Amino acid sequence: MASTAPSSSGFGKKRQKKGQRQQEVTNVAESTRIRIAQVLEQFRVSNDEVYTFESNLSNRDRAAVHMLCRKMGMKSKSSGRGDQRRISVFKTKQNVDALKGKDMLSCFKFSEEANDVLQDLFTRYPPGDGETSEQVVGKHSKKVDKLRRRKDDMFCKPAMNKSEIAKRVESLASRIENNPNLRQITAQRSKLPIASFKDVITSNVESNQVVLISGETGCGKTTQVPQFILDHMWGKGETCKIVCTQPRRISATSVSERISCERGETVGDTVGYKIRLESRGGRQSSIMFCTNGVLLRVLVTNGSASFNKEAPRKMGKDDISDITHIIVVLIILIFN
Ligand SMILES: Nc1ncnc2c1ncn2[C@@H]1O[C@H](COP(=O)(O)OP(=O)(O)OP(=O)(O)O)[C@@H](O)[C@H]1O
Image (cartoon, rainbow, N blue to C red; front, side, top):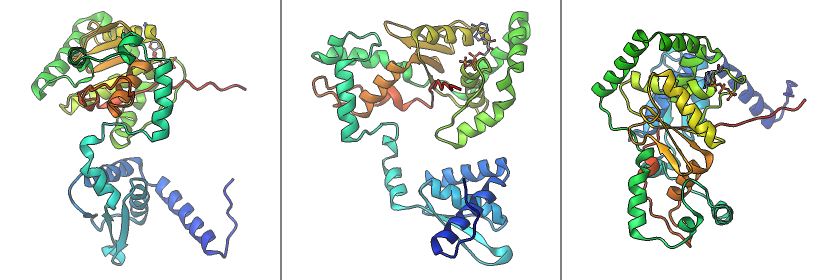
């Protein structure tokens, strides 16, 4: 429980001030917070060292900038008086270093300890995604490496330009218009509880690295969220690769079938899957369903190619560097 008792100590005052700031930030309109986050993110990935906001920000907006800056590991300072008060944002050395290595962002780095745990886990239980244990821990030939690399383009972004994306969007709209069955499915989709959260979800996904979505069973998390993101990206004329994990192989295949059906397509077109011994779609699929094991293996082997010393795998970054969104299913059970 938060204490509201006044305190004369410096620490108490600091905490009080922090609490006030947090309160001010929660009072800032969501659209303003998103806009500020976008401006800060653009600055963070730019080569600029300082960014100064216009003097038209209110006290609350500036408080939001301070808070978001701290969250993003940057520094901020206000200067000037009255109407001329402005807030400037500065990068720290860590930001600059991270930026220098931004090509490496898609590579997951594990601590020594985590590497040991994962190595042990994968040696005992090699992830089953179609390879036999022998292939995972056994000898590795250049030929197998080459073949695997070619096969793994299913995690690459579809190569589509703006006009191809526009054609896809138009073709979906005309399929819905001309097919009564699809029209009915589309009408049902628009009545799902998650439908009214489409914009909130896409704007949050846009301005945050991690977004947690929780909703009742059947509200539409699994089938709708990947499509919200896809339609949003296509709406901007951008291609994407959305990888969604499912706890079971059967759910990975059935959900990809369901979403394909909702779009009047067959599996392997816009939506595909990759599970043990089987896959549909590939590079051309913008949404890929796979088991947690498949994704983990791809992330781990790319994050640390020499992670398993017995079987150094040089898969190259191509496997994951194209993934724009990862949707992981978390099942949280609440017992009363
Ligand atoms: N194969 C299917 N055939 C017909 N309707 C389906 C099918 N799969 C899903 N639906 C419909 O789509 C709705 C949304 O399902 P979805 O799986 O996206 O919900 P969810 O929020 O992910 O549920 P859960 O938390 O149980 O995974 C369901 O209410 C159901 O009516």
